[in-house]
Length: 508
Image 1 (tube, rainbow, N blue to C red):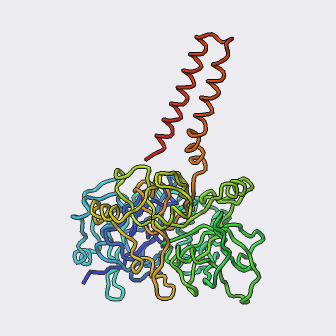
Image 2: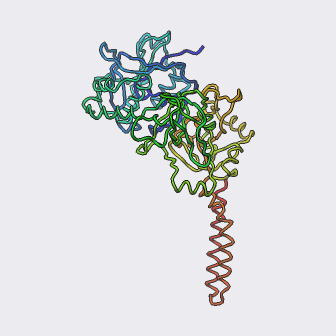
Image 3: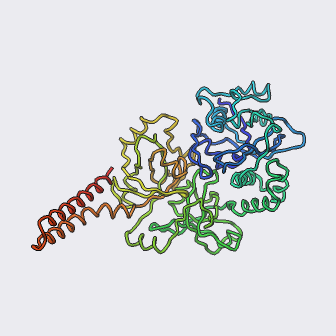
């Protein structure tokens, strides 16, 4: 039986979404950093809010957190100070690898292991030599909870050995949001709590701190129940329907980010408001494809985040006049696909792989360019087909740690229609592409044809005969000198060769 520990987090890992990066790996939309994830990608058995008898403070500077301070706790217990934390019940090996990722990295993952029994006896353990670059170089034994040890990590120095510094607003919002995920603490209590913390007091005025807390609360997700089928629009944006009183403010957002309760999957969609048929009950309508994308059945709960136009974090897939004209004129179809595997970054560069059904839906052929969109980024890449042979070959060429197939039972739960498992079509892409999109394994993505590629693809066939005809006609004029005719024909031939080269280059 695997040894379990309670990992006690007090910084940005208070946010479940951020903590999931340490388990499942991937690029964070919050920071410019890629996390390898744990070898064992099992979700936490449990997570609870907790208060630990250690004083919280902010010090040092982290490049990926706006170059500003990050959170630590004093390595000595306090009789008066309590720090809000969140505990995740995970395996001891997962905790070892989380410590390693925090220290970016510490030693060889396969050799690195914390001796829990020794930690219990000593109360704390230093990790390796006294290295200034290792922020979280000391593991602490906090106590026992439900027969499992409570462990965390902090700096190797004591609180009085370093100057306090100011954390960035983004980092602070992540911590505040993480606290409120598990306990809906009123803003007055949050204000009182943070006003006493070294690194906050003397750097943030009460007015500024209150504004940050208000912004966090205003942008918090609303927990909603999936009720039925909403508006379906395969020619453009995905729609969800919510009751007209869902967002209790004057400006109702046109877009929202819908996430599973465990925050493992998310989709961006346009919001359509409908009259409330269920009183005060918060409901959301999702069509079958979106329910499959989130692996959510009717009656399941989802989180709905409003997207404001001022927030540059998300792609605004707005149904503009230009998009409407282009989409209708060229018959653009969108399809939802799920990331099933990220390969080595040198396996297939600038290529994704799709099932044949996806090619038929969006109207492309193998080798064509498709546009892939996540809520955070979009890019163009060539699409090839997934065959059984290719899928088997990929599985044989990848190491187990990098070959994590979608396990719907383990990661997403099983989405069922009439007792049959269903899911959206898969997409295979390289490791760098997945991280560029800032999504992790199992994430749903939106794909469509690239109109620019379609035009370039056909330019060669249209332009070549036209150019040659025009040149031949012009060259037949007797008034032109032989020298001029040779120059014109040479330039025309070079232009045709250039078009041919462009056409060849577009092929994979």
